Picture (cartoon, rainbow, N blue to C red):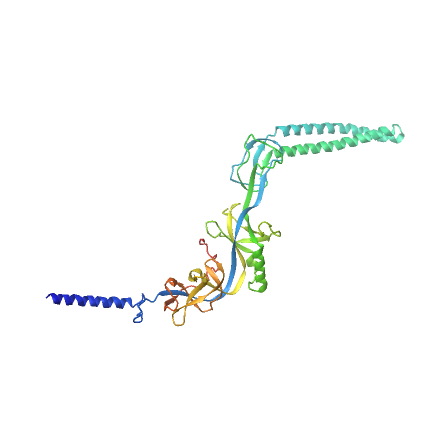
Length: 402
C-alpha cells in the first residue's frame, strides 16, 4: 500500500518536472528554443539606421541683460524731500520718482526774474535817448563820443537782457530738475537714497535704476577656436551654412526647461577678450511674461549648420569596451547579435552622431542590450520610431533637460 502511494507521488513529480523544463525552453513570446540550448533568447528592440540632414547645435552659457538700463542720477544738488514711487514696480517715462528741496531754486528763479525785469525797465528810456542822439549827431549838435557811448550802452543793455533771460531759463530748468522723473519706461528697483538724504548733481552713485526688459539681450561668449573650427567645416562642405537658421537661437533655463520663445542673433563682437580668448554674441529674446531677468544665467542653443546624410543613434544603444572605445550591437542577417565599432563625432542632446561604423539599414539594438553578447541569437522587434526624428537636436518640445 505504501509502495503504491510512493510510485503515485513520483509520477506526479516527474510530470511536473517535464512541464517546468518545457516551459524553460520557451521565451516570453512562447517560442520553443533549440533543444540543448541551455539559455533563453533575449528579447530586444532595435532601430533601423537611416541617414538624414541634421541641424548641428551647440550649447553655450549666456547671461541675460536688460534691453535698456537707466541709472537715476540727480541733476541738481539738495535734500531729498520725498520718494514717490514704489520699489520693484513698473513705471512709465515721465513718471515722478523723487522730489528734491525746491526752496533754493525757487529763490534763485525769483532773483533772476527780478534782474531781468530791471534791465527791461531801462530799455525804453535808453532807446528814446539813442533816437534823439541819432538826429542830433547829424547836425553836429552832440559830440561823436556822446553818440558812441549811448549806442554802446544800448547794445550792452540788450545783451544783458538776453543774459538775464538765459539765467531765468537756467534756474527754471534747475527747479524742474528738483522733480526727478523716469527717463524711460520699465521696472524700477530699490531706492539707494532715503527721504532726508543729501544728493549732489551728477553724483557717481545713482538714486535708483530703471530697467526695460521686453525684449532682453542674452550675451553669449564663444571661443575663437570653436569659431575657426566651424568655419573650416563650412568651407570644406562638411556642414552646410544656413544664415536664417543660424540666426535663430533657443534658450534652456536653469531648471532645465526650454524657453518658449525663439531669439534672434543681433551681432558678433569684433574684439576678442584676451583673458578668455572669446568673443561675445548678442541675441535678442521677447520677454512678455518677464521670465528672463537681468543677470540670469541661461544656456543658449546655437544652430551651427546642417550636416547632410548624417547617421545618429540613441545614446543608450552605445556601449564602451575596456579601452573606452564605443560600439553597438546590431541584429545580423542570421538573427544573431554582432558588434560594430564606432567613430563618434559629437552628442546632440540624447543621441550620438556616428561618422563611421554603421550603414543605412543596420538594425541597432537599443533596448535589452544589457542581455546581449556577441554571436547570441536575439528575438528582435523594431521600435515604432523614425530613428529619433522627433527633435534630433532635442529641442522640438518643451520637456526638461538635464
